[in-house]
Image 1 (cartoon, rainbow, N blue to C red):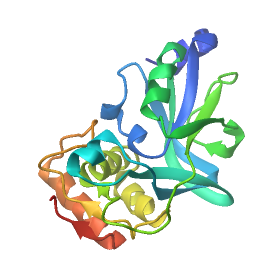
Image 2 (image 1 turned 60 degrees about the horizontal axis):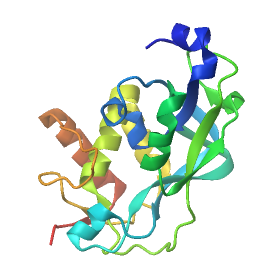
Image 3 (image 1 turned 180 degrees about the vertical axis):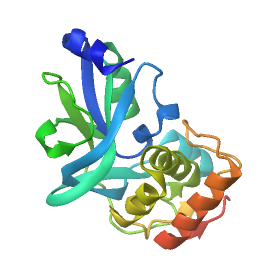
Image 4 (image 1 turned 180 degrees about the horizontal axis):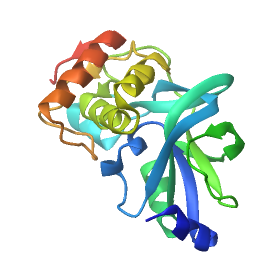
Length: 212
C-alpha cells in the first residue's frame, strides 16, 4: 500500500497514531502502513487497569499497558498508521480499554508529505484504577519486546532510548514471559535485539518478576 492509493480514495482510509505495540508492523494487519514522527500534546505512560484474559492465565490481577495523557508541552514518538476504514472495528476491538479520540495532524511532525482530508485518531487509555505498582499487575515482557522492537525498527537505538526516557511508570514490575509469551501479538527477536532490549529495560529501572 502507498500514500498515492490513500490520496486517490481518501474516503476509504483512516489514520491512527500508534505509540506502543502498534508501532511494530508485525502486530497489525498487512494492509496497514505508517510513517514515523513526533506528536506534540501527549505523554506516554504505563497504566494499570482491570483483569484481562492473558493476565488471568498467569494468575495476575490485571493489565499494565501503555497509554498517553494530554500534556501540551510533551512530545511522543510514534507511527501515523493508514488503514482501510473497514478494518477500524477490529482495531477498536484490539484497543478495547481505550477511547478513540480525534487527532489534529498539525501536531504531528514527519518527513512525509501526508495527505489531507483523512480522519485521524489516537487511542487514549481508560482512567487507570490504580497508580500503585503492584506485582499482581505487571507488564508482560513479551509486550515490551513487541513495543521496543517496533521502535528499534522505526527509530533506531536512539528511538528505543527516547522511548524509555519519555515513558512514565517504569516502577511497574515486568514479568519474564519471553520464553512462554502470553502477549497475543508476541514477536520473535534475534539475539542482538534481545540484548539491546534487555539493556534498555535494565536502564529503565523496572523491577523484574518471575513467572509463578
